[in-house]
Image (cartoon, rainbow, N blue to C red; front, side, top):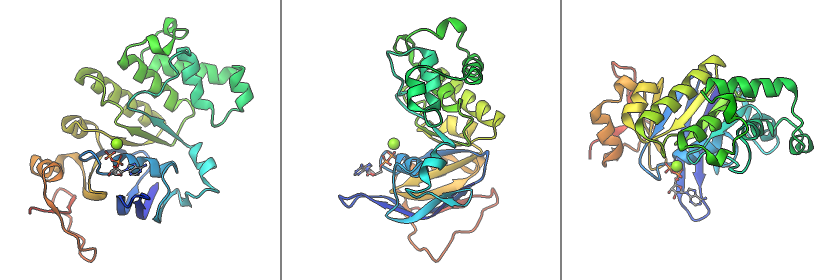
Length: 267
Ligand SMILES: Nc1ncnc2c1ncn2[C@@H]1O[C@H](COP(=O)(O)OP(=O)(O)O)[C@@H](O)[C@H]1O
Ligand SMILES: [Mg+2]
């Protein structure tokens, strides 16, 4: 369980990227974060692995509050998938996947390429799972197509059997067909190991297709939180095109028939 408790992040320049976020995300949920650019999606994801520290409030994983003292241990239980893949382009596909073990393998072992046989076996299994053939293993990652690079990124994220996968716009630079393939991979691989996924994106149709839960953000606040079928076209319009936040912390809007809360009021 990931639990945000009144999490607020104000950058030194005064920008409030997250405002009083309280959320509980149970283990195994595929949670899609939507919202216009600047809404705070990346900041929210980075709060979970401690790259963003709260100005107020906290985030906790299974009851352990993320602090400088706990974040090293907690980070070993997480992995990230990035928009621009973040592979070492000059290294082989296999090395890139094994790099996902760096948090748990000593640096000198990693530098010398001394990975345990079970880690190598897991890398091969994952690469097969993401439909990269054995002949891809030794190729330079930079020589692959974008879709193939993201497959490597997904395999790298899952090699350490993470409990939480943070995917920040993992399909933003891929075409629609490949985007669907990559999201299928992330969802199915996460299901197989009961990992929680927090995935930001911009494609409404893909969000509805893949999410167990949609979280809509605007101006650093959660303005929609519900199942994908409740994220209707009207909600989409509210999220992206100027409805007004009903800024009254005393009044929690009621659950509607679809089981979602709508925090927006049309201006
Ligand atoms: N390191 C930073 N310093 C100052 N402002 C930042 C920093 N990172 C993000 N921001 C600001 O915080 C807000 C939220 O950003 P971000 O989380 O990246 O939004 P999103 O991912 O939804 O596009 C934006 O106004 C952005 O400009
Ligand atoms: Mg972002």
